[in-house]
Image 1 (cartoon, rainbow, N blue to C red):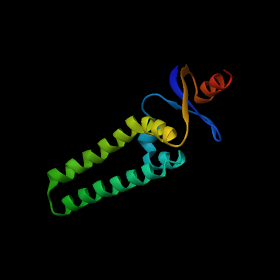
Image 2 (cartoon, rainbow, N blue to C red; image 1 turned 30 degrees about the vertical axis):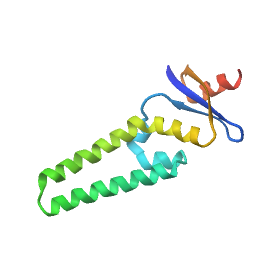
Image 3 (cartoon, rainbow, N blue to C red; image 1 turned 90 degrees about the horizontal axis):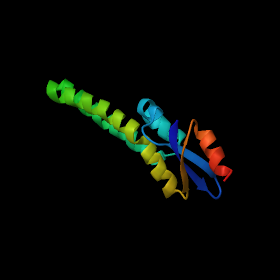
Image 4 (tube, rainbow, N blue to C red; image 1 turned 45 degrees about the vertical axis):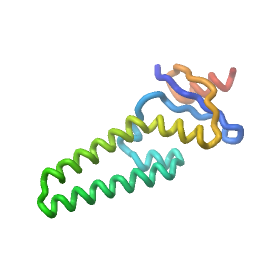
Length: 120
């Protein structure tokens, strides 16, 4: 079973966020953030990827291989960071947008966690 933080908004209703990392955030970064309506996070991920990739390209062109390699690994590490922190960022986003943390519950799915908390 997974642990879910269940949130409630007076207009938008319930939402739940799984505790821990996010596989979709790891693999789909900015698209995951767009799907969760976290526009500023999505833009910052895209800009970071562009900057890191551009630096990697520049270092390759001027033949500073060690820096190009560092940029390659930095980009890889950045995707891992997004995957690890994605759900935490989602929780912060919900709290900033008027959601209230109702409960933390262990359940198999997000929907079942919401159903249990909604029936309190």
